Image (cartoon, rainbow, N blue to C red; front, side):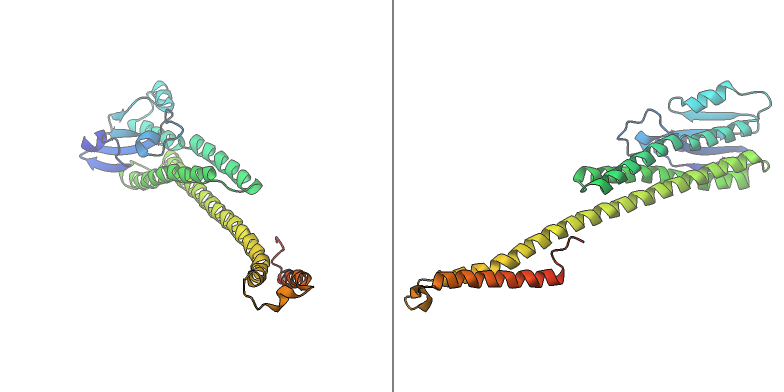
Length: 263
């Protein structure tokens, strides 16, 4: 009962006597857009399964629960109803993951179209946090369903296989989206680093031109009495020619090294 009432309880399965107790989690359709935690992003469904009854405990109704409840017939066993509810609870994450996939594609187009910014980086980290919550739930759910199918189910059936495949598909879907987010984060960092390198290269090239000129101006700006060039008629033109020659030599060297190319 403590596990049943714990709002943060992860998926689990136990058998007490002839009753199987199981907890799974489904996506909360009322979750806010910025939900990033288990309590705000998912809802817990607890099952008490016996050959004669099925009891579910959950906070508020979900559309698939109401639909299954309204379509129960006499031929369905408690086990069949439970399998159907678990499958629907696993599939409840798919629409939310499809929205995340669309958001990832949008961020990817924006990253490729212009320079990255802080807002996109924050969005990627939030997407990763949401996917991490769902992936963790999918992993625990898959372990629970494997035990349920192999140990606690009366006999193999296509419904059990379908339920297990849904859980495996959810975990793989989350894994693929997590990898996409990680790749985008790496791309964001690489583009930001490339932009920083471009700025540093520009500043370095500018410094290469102006530092020698500053050095020459600094020498001839000293106030020593004995400086032959100060009384020379062509001293000014000589200093300009020297600075031009130094600048041209630096330009040729930089051009030869390819430091001015943006490739």
